[in-house]
Image (tube, rainbow, N blue to C red; front, side):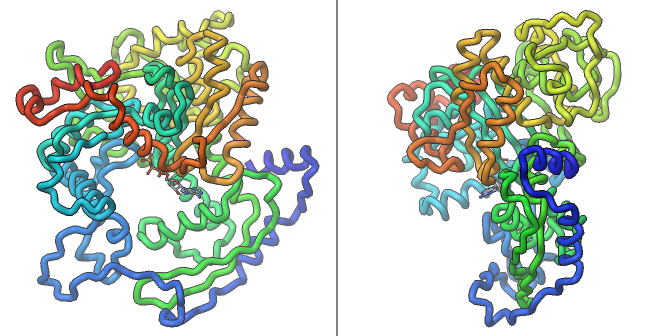
Length: 527
Ligand SMILES: Nc1ncnc2c1ncn2[C@@H]1O[C@H](COP(=O)(O)OP(=O)(O)OP(=O)(O)O)[C@@H](O)[C@H]1O
């Protein structure tokens, strides 16, 4: 990537000094930190106060307080992250109920402290709009409903999918919504107030991967704080800060640059470090387009250890929602593609794997092969004997029927531009007018896209991949200066106030009688 970047910069007539890397490495190697006494540091951190007596009941801490526990108290606390990559984080728990309880506790505390609704018994007067992923798991939604009704005691509850919430918040009716979060990126085409089912994609990477990759790259270039360890809370927060301040996707900003930061650990003097960066600030966020540079090795760990996939109550088979776009993404990554659920082998999770078949080829007929297959693929699809392009819709027959075990075993991580075009092609289904509509209204939200130059870079990549639509492609942010990181929440609150939403509220009495079966009638999409 370094070499490619150099070539690209030269071809864009940018000045590239041959020894830039050496210069910054040498600087980083020989610059010791400066020590500032903790008491003289005007920006010293307020650490969470913990009772000194080890016999005192500790209870729990959530949110920022949990991340600011001083090191000396760490042995008495264990930090849990009950959700990871938009899935239950099963690897950290022994019991399902502890995992569910932690999620309920975090939400309860957030409502009490952030919304100042301190008395839980009053919550029966409130309706709760809960935003779920576009490509959710049924069990997750029904479990959430149980939590909101029984543990938190809301008077009524309704659900909205996140891309639809983004369009409600931004006031759009048609858009291809791309939400770049911390650990996942979701993409979905929305049309006339409905998420197009087959366009839903959920990639398991996001801003946290950029943070980690940036730090790994800096360490390789002799980052002076060599002991940085992202498992330590204050180091993780520091890394997030450095990424947010210094990473960019503007090629014009690439030159040796000097930055500094303060390391604040509890009970220690503050250390001020100076360091230099070169291309790391740009290469790390470019991982969105070359995600094999991210460390994806742990993301599937212990998946399905505690929480099984959802099954159809009557027919017995697995029945979590699927999307042909997501299946196409998985097929691009995995060489194993099933045909109509036939199976013949074991996968790494011990689930039965499907028989391999040939992949239908061109998802994007007008893109040549080298561009179409993302650099991130870990296996290559079997070549087709017949080179004639297959219409986009026809790829769906094979990909729709991916066995659930494959969906669990293959980590969906591919280049962002390919994923967006896959979503749009499955959302528009060969209709050029719709393709144009979605390409001209790609709305990017979420904190992961806050890196300077993100939108421009994405726009250029999409134009390169679909030159015939180059004039139409526009990447937008939510209008009216809405915060792209909060627009989904705003959409949820707008949705809760619409009169048309009335039918989707689930009340307490009907929930007591019918339970999660109500979701079939109450969700405003095909549950
Ligand atoms: N100014 C910024 N520059 C770069 N990255 C940023 C900036 N602000 C926030 N981020 C990143 O955005 C991510 C958080 O975004 P967001 O709040 O949309 O995610 P989330 O919804 O919590 O994540 P997920 O969708 O994975 O659950 C973090 O990785 C954070 O580092």
